[in-house]
Length: 68
Image 1 (cartoon, rainbow, N blue to C red):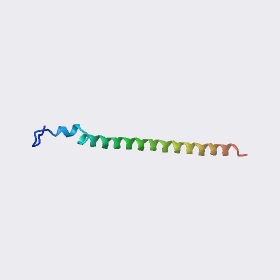
Image 2 (spheres, one colour):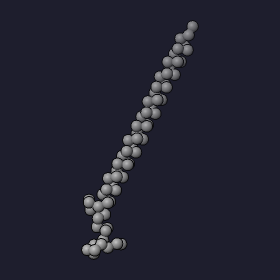
Image 3 (cartoon, rainbow, N blue to C red):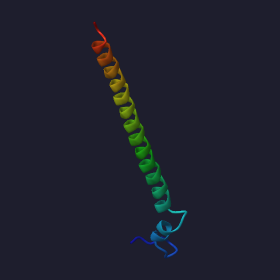
């Protein structure tokens, strides 16, 4: 473990809110929450496409069955 000129280790900065561990945790939070939002938006877009296709096929089936 590296020591600075005061004799304290750099590990002290990783333990408090001013250190790099806090910044890393915030950065990781944004990455994970962004990925979760992206995944849910992609899922809902896929469900929307499936619902649109279903309504198109239902209308096509009704039109076929109504032919004389």
